[in-house]
Amino acid sequence: MKILLTVQDNSIAPRFDQATEVIIAEHDGQRMLGEPRTIILPHRSAEELSDLIVKEGIGCVVCGGIEDNYYRFFTWKKITVFDGIIGSHAEALQMVVAGTLQPGLILPSVKNG
Figure 1 (cartoon, helix red, strand yellow):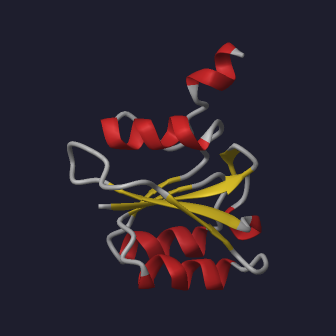
Figure 2: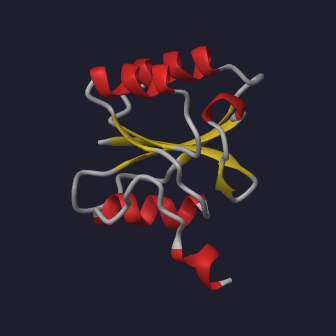
Figure 3: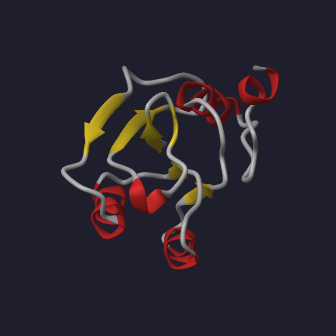
């Protein structure tokens, strides 16, 4: 499954529609396949980011806030959305792979530090 995380600095971007950087990682259910890749988007555009998600065959999106129409579109496309995530993108990715990420989660590193 391909996972897309919206990124701002070293954290999950607070808003889907404001993200200008994403990380795409792939795993087979047990381990990561290769190194995650970073894509810098030319500008902020929820529509272009949505197109990228569909074209890349993303199965899971990890983001901060997301407008309801995009959330509904992704779930209609059978794309899992973990929204409302606060914390580092690396920690969020680990939790997706481990199957422990939940929507609306403040990650442990934020709570502890």
